[in-house]
Length: 514
Image (tube, rainbow, N blue to C red; front, side):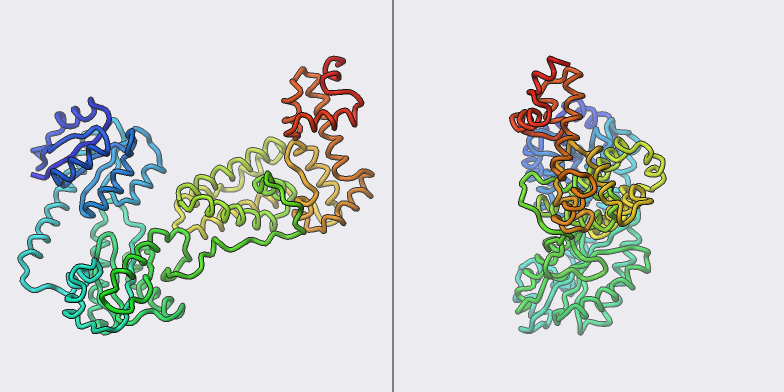
């Protein structure tokens, strides 16, 4: 019987699953239940169950944190996740831990039994393989490579493999695009890899350490050309099954006994593959997302409250497609520096795209049908395996929006477009320097153009627009501090001073009189 551990903070659910499912008929026995992740870890260590069924949301230690700990304890443990939330992001995070299934509450009995039947066959096969390996008197090349990479008797394994004292390098690859029940495709790729590298044993030794496949190269990859050539070899093999993959090199190990360090580095780079380059073997090159972004125009005085997302909105609304692309790239790099996490960045990109669309449509209702005609990139962004692809999709979409909003505009009508922006965006932190970047002008020159055509300096015109809007809101009975925020002044005292300057009385007095 396969031992099962059920983990859920709801007593009724634990008891219901333990009693309602015909476990023994399916070849299982419920060894224990646990009310939280910490209790589950203790029972896992005590009982070593073959299957863990865990709720994704629990107090203290969540289901995702529990799975991460289990993977450290036993990479071969099978896991089914339960969730009361049909949440794609939770599912995606759980899948990244190589779980065996994802079930929504209330649990469908037939669906769970289907999983149990499938897992029973998989676990049975694994047990047979383990038994065969235990009885096998001669240690195979793959077992020796695994021992070398896991720092188990590394010197002895290196000697048996005949590696000598020369340097080597580990390259790992992880298959992508596999769906549930497609184990046969993965096995086909493994067989292709085994045959290919058996014929090239002088170059490297093929091995598997789930969820990875890899090659222990007997000579390290020396440059980008060598990495590109290896990636192409791997691509030709994997593509025969219509699959994709990511690959990473761990760097040269001075001696075979140090190959475990190269293995660890390659694994770390695979875990960070979302931020790497496409169609290449990832290595320790400088991170492209750490590079500074150059924005056109002269830099203005540093402002800690400067909102780059507002700049993006203004660039899109002004029809400045090139600046919109540059600002999108700059936003993404800032997101990476804030939290280097794939889910977080994709969530933030969705928020930024949605917010930009909503704010454009609110100020420009006539754009709604045009925006609706542009396919949203967010589905593709969420399925992107590389941040470069996500950036390209979002930047391209922002360029499309900027072309819609800027249709019919051209060089020479910049001041009209700026005054229109002020009328719509007076509550934003508008700066002449920001607009000079968007319209690709020197800030001082743009200021002179504005004064010559409008008859007032930029800041004076902006203040007057804001004060006129403030007068309307005060006449409606709104409180002074609320009006200040609504028209773009975060400091009420500063708003009072501006209002007195242009109206002659305080905002409170004006409200009483009107």
